[in-house]
Image (cartoon, rainbow, N blue to C red; front, side, top):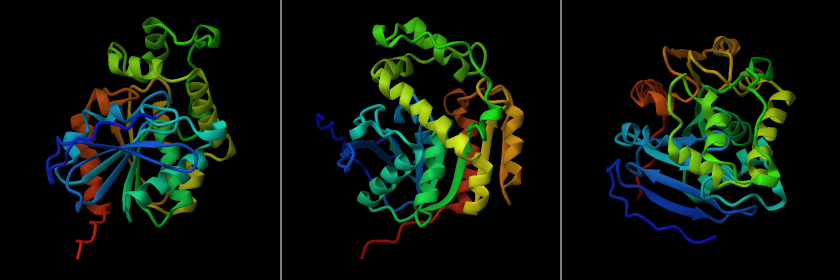
Length: 287
């Protein structure tokens, strides 16, 4: 993989992004960092068929007070496809944990959007020492809450798909009338058919094995759930399923669809910052 351009980081400058490629045993992982390095860590994990760029509107709102770390999941964005093609969610959690070790992160509040919430949960399952709390944004609690879309028009023999095909596929990821951003169209087109399908299948398998509220109850981590009430992929009322988790904070975003991190970054950031104020750990100062 071609090494990325490295942008110099100015401590405390929320707009300065540092990109790097971490070498892991099953494939290189691309990470981005913003904000002061001694600030509490927020780890942001994107959903399927997306990348770390999906958080771009939110990062400046978070990075003045936090060290914000974003990852491209395997096969997404600028991360390599996993050696052996293993997209299983527990393995994703393992890789993210190894990446945080390389970055010298001891504690993080982990935020997952959509299926990124499964990787976030898997990280907490594999490495409870790293995860201080979890925030899940429009993450479906179980397959019974999934609102089945129309048939996917993607044909592996005609990959990559056209803009129109991608926009049709991605349209339910936003509230009605919201235009799918071109950069997200380009991100999906840059993926392989194998990566798109395998990542979605891995999420389904993870939920079929055990519903998310059951997993989170066992973990005992502080939990915030944010759900746009216009979600067209997961039944919005299913956010209430998370209330079985002791102490869970379930919050609705009226008027937002499945992707409030792009549709309404201001309100989403306000909810995240309020939760983080009580559940983050500041990194120890270097001696």
